[in-house]
Image (cartoon, rainbow, N blue to C red):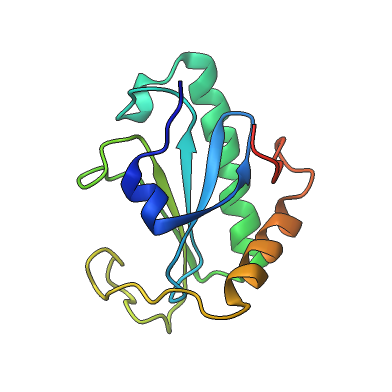
Length: 143
């Protein structure tokens, strides 16, 4: 049975689900930073997914990256699976801008997170949910 790692639960807000992955928003207003987590047990690496799940994962990741790139007018999309701190398979999709506080370096460990304030979180969630509506089976209702 799928269970989201406690660190991801603490650091993120659930956006919704694709057919395979749960989509999370990292609670850091410095970047539009989203995380895909396949809803499968005990996986640490993408290659551990079944052939069918791997194809679905790549579809969901590609759709998410394109939507984020367009919706947030990215200068660059950073997509990475590190797993050094959280062993559960999860893949970061981070919208980067030349003027963001970490540019051009990677975002990890650069600055402490600044949580969303006031209506910012609701606005960010609504923006991405609207942009993903009807794409690759995304649904904000959890499966």
